[in-house]
Amino acid sequence: MEKKRILIVEDEELTRNLLVEVLKLCDYKIESVENGVEAIKRNAASSYDLIITDYKMPEMNGLELIRRIRMKNPSIPILVVTGDGPEGELLKSGALACIKKPFNISELQRIARAILDERQSSPA
Image (cartoon, rainbow, N blue to C red; front, side, top):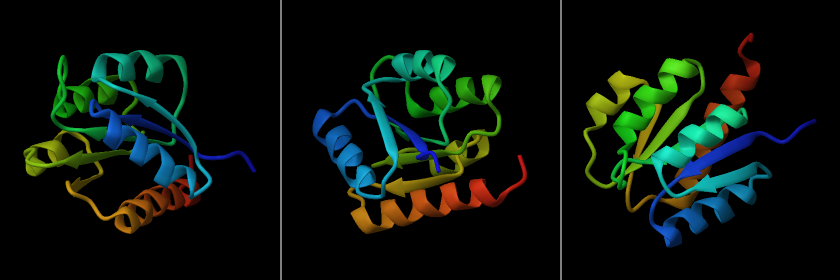
């Protein structure tokens, strides 16, 4: 069985590396970028089972990233990690879920697993 692919979009290197490592423990294939512009390019070149993005980033915030991804790929699940982002607006724009910083690692892993398991059991 092929590993599920996750794209992490996070401008803070320490947080990005933490996300990569804790999700690798769940046996996912992880790629990461540091901003929304790079995420758009990577998403155009590859397919992902889940995108996890920060809300506050330079160049393009998480809300704009969600909107752009939704135009090209309306079905990919997006999880937003945010300290103080507008959760209601993020969810309305197409985020499947939001998790607050500082996040609990086990909770993040559980949410990612639930999203990916649900996507696997849904008809394509």
